[in-house]
Structure formats: C-alpha cells, structure tokens
Length: 183
Image (cartoon, rainbow, N blue to C red; front, top):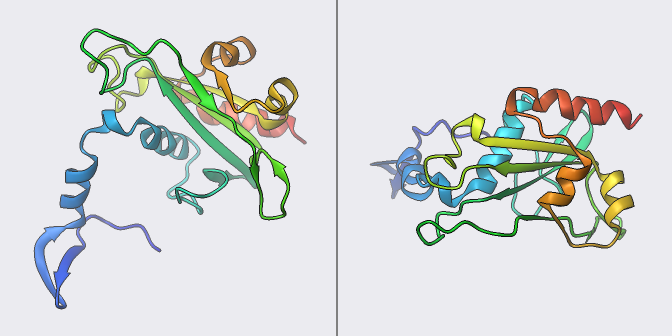
C-alpha cells in the first residue's frame, strides 16, 4: 500500500464524503502523549531517512529495515499521560523478548536495538514532538543476547550502563556505527 497524503476522502456508495483521512488521523492520534511508541518509531525512521518502513505492521518481528539490517525500536518515558498529577512512573524498562521467526528459530528477530527515552516528567517537558526531549541508545542485538540472554525485559538503568545516549541529530550516525562494527 502506498502512503496516504491525508486528502483521501471517506466514501459512501462510491461518492466522496466531506471527511478525509486527515480528519481520522486528527481524531485518533492527536494526543501524541498516548502513543509515544509510535512517535519513537517515526523519529527513528526519519533519522534513518526512511519514508515508510517496508514492514510497518503491528505484528512484525522487527520495526524496520535499514541497510539490510533489521531494526527494533523500543520506547519508555518518565511521564505517561495516564499518571496522576505530579506522579512519575518509577520503573522504566524495555521489552527484549525472543520470538519464533519464520524459520522456526526462537531468538531475537532483529540485528539492532534503538532504545528511546522520552525524558520529561510532565506534559510540557515530555512533549514528544520536541526532539530535544528524547535520548536514544543504540546497541547491536548480539550485545543484548550476550548480556541479557533469556531476559524478557531490561531496565533503562542497565541500558544506560552499557550505551551512551545520543540525541536525534546524531541517531543515524550511532546506528551507522553499530552496523559498521557488525561486519
């Protein structure tokens, strides 16, 4: 399927209505504080110069391909829109569960992880459209396999001990560096 422009109308019996896909997107996804995982994937794709990941589907075993490598994007944040006023989530972690691949192998189905942290602790400082509110940690899956073998999750603090944060402007360089080291 091609990317939609937003101008596509909903139809009724073949006739265009006054509603477009942009109306739907605005209705469904306006509160980006509710979908930081999707925003993180979008930001990683854009940093890598990807218009649309080939396999953008909720049920794929990895999030996108870049230079022949499978990239998995994981997100966590201090603030969640469902937190009570003044309360911040105390534990931040990322899912790193293994899965059965198409070949039947039970393993992590990606080559590179990009762990994304939305840093703010309230609606203003956790606004996901402000790129300065994000930190990214890039690791090869081989490191995750070696250090965390069969773990299903890993804490942000553990990731921060083994990887340095990069900002969005340097994310592509960090991914390139990890991919180059894999050869």
